[in-house]
Image (cartoon, rainbow, N blue to C red; front, top):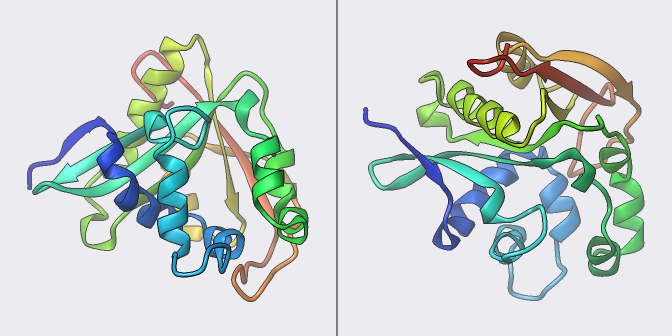
Length: 201
């Protein structure tokens, strides 16, 4: 299996959005559902990803490609941009924003924030997630940052195993109210990992 890692392009936005739907644990469906008649949450997220500016953009995405298809992706940016922007609060209904506010109020200052990491099921256990995190560590070093940070649901044990192997540890646990589309228990974890000379510790 030949795996190619590269920066994402605008034509990758739809597959990236599909992977983000997997990574988001229901959050993407919760936010985007029924916003625009005839468009799915993945299609709407892909439109946002296609913008040149903003943190949630293809320009902040690294992809793993197998056989010409996007098999995995990682979106990352400076933690100072991990916040509820004016665009978000104007675009999404207020009640939806209020429900996911906790996901945007936790911040690890001066870190590279991992917004999303996902690999399609057939390609898991081939080291793609770890390799993408290694690329994120390289990006952090170029930006003069020595920490990676992320937020994950407390019940996402599969993700925790990957992050633990990559040197991430829990720094904060926050409450989160479950929803039919986001049926999670235990709240959310804020995790960090130090960046060493080779990658993630």
